[in-house]
Length: 408
Image 1 (cartoon, rainbow, N blue to C red):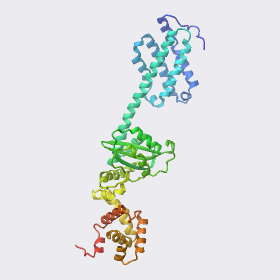
Image 2 (image 1 turned 60 degrees about the vertical axis):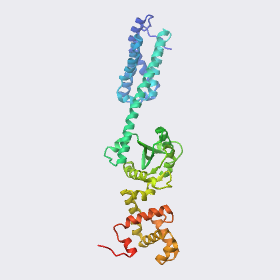
Image 3 (image 1 turned 90 degrees about the vertical axis):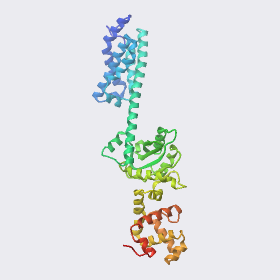
Image 4 (image 1 turned 135 degrees about the horizontal axis):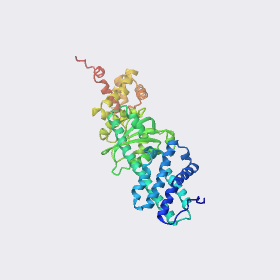
């Protein structure tokens, strides 16, 4: 324990103690900064301006302690003044843990100077350090609460922009401000909000799956914008290759009862409005599919969406099914029409087209290879038939098959 320097002996009466404390306050501050630089690596790595700001906080703490020792009733406002001396950006660059380390070093230096001189002064220093620690926790808690409220409002604004499709030039900067860790492909998941919604639990589930999410709660509707997290942000198992339908299935417990619809995958977050439109349209008509799975792809609800007037669903059916088949071979379109019109009967289709049933099988296999949908399944047959109807509207394909002359 270092000896008290000559001229710094501690008087016994309080007035003398106060005068002594004011006299050595400068030496205490200097010794504190020297100890910070020697014991805390994060302090020595700071830029000079930041170190100066930390020094202001330490000096304010020592000065505040002297004022508090003179009048202990001033604790509430004096403790707050310590952190008021620091610039606002210091709160973002110095963590609560580092602040508590700063308090501990300051108290240690002060204790060394007053040790074995007056137990009352030492107890006062310990009591005051506790008050300052609580004040620091309060400052950081209020800052975190304010940031949390701001982030929630900003996140709601970003999700609303994605859902409405009214993205502007500021959307990327808003997304960056939220600390979005997603990259690459994105999909939108729409379901119902559970009665006891725990957004933190949902985010933890997403992190374990290697994805980042933007959460939007719109009354009874819960919307998730899902993007794969960068490698440095992943936690838990290696799930980088999980497809979005599997991710949606694992996030399903975080939603309420009812339908859960996953929009199609898009290349980037700025394109998420395309996935959102499909997911919202699918969510609106999911009840029309009696045995719809949970979750269900929005593209599996294309017939219901088209019947409800969704232009995106109509365009998707025509561009992904009708036009590729027509461009590939007219025989495929004719065979598919006949197969669906004849109740998916191979023999009836073969008789109508004057071909062998194996030829019908081969052509249906080609249909599946070209567009990815299998006409032999009842659900996919409905999707294909809807696409054929929409593609034929306005053309003479249906009329030529039926032998009906064209009208002017």
